[in-house]
Length: 310
Image (cartoon, rainbow, N blue to C red; front, side, top):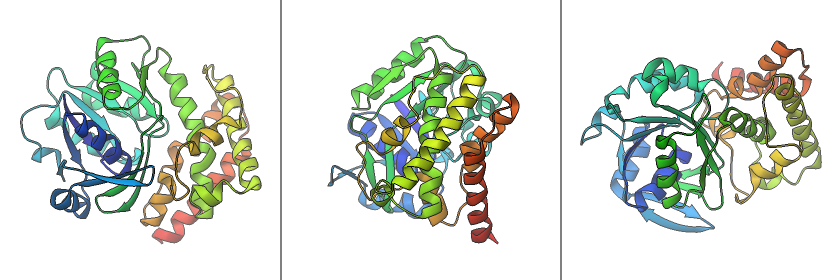
């Protein structure tokens, strides 16, 4: 299968690396020239279980540099606030049978993408695969025993979704197809809400983060708020215990792992807070559920962003 990964940062490289190893025609697309040059010169180095291996990959800075015609699958992994811009720049990858899969964090990407590529070709999903950068072309790849779930945004199961799941499973990416992808998206939102903002605010990687009972209590409170919002919104979750997302977020990842929100701040960039904890606040307002913990986390991240960006 020919696969284009739009926004091939640490997570995209982790997934793209194992898909390449499985024999697929994978193109990693990232506008970071240093990252792309490192992979072109030296390959992509994946660290799994503390062991490094190098994979020869196809890496480009723009979708226009991808050769060989349209892709069978385009995986969108850009930051939430870049979704429209990135997809509009990658429409050259689309053919009549191309499937577009969003595996981004947070809420709302499917509507943005559908307006550009058409809802009929769109799949939504969430992945618990982890990726954390070590150096240009070198990432921690948390792919083992990490679930990915995909499905049609409007429900049901399609042959396209089944085919993508087969490809992912063949590459060692544990993937299933869900008829309730909206619930799955909210399940992953709970996981992101549990650790992302707290790691970014404290500047702690998972090792020290998970040693703090105070931080775990705050994470649990934030998740409990989100679960209350989901219930009031009629969302069917598979997670029933507000402590579970804290456990899921860190399962199988090394102590040095950093979630994407902390990675963004360390690069001097804004975060996806508006699409994660911020989305919980907004959805809570719609259904009359108070979200003071998430509102506080959003305020803290906004303050850090203002300090970084001036």
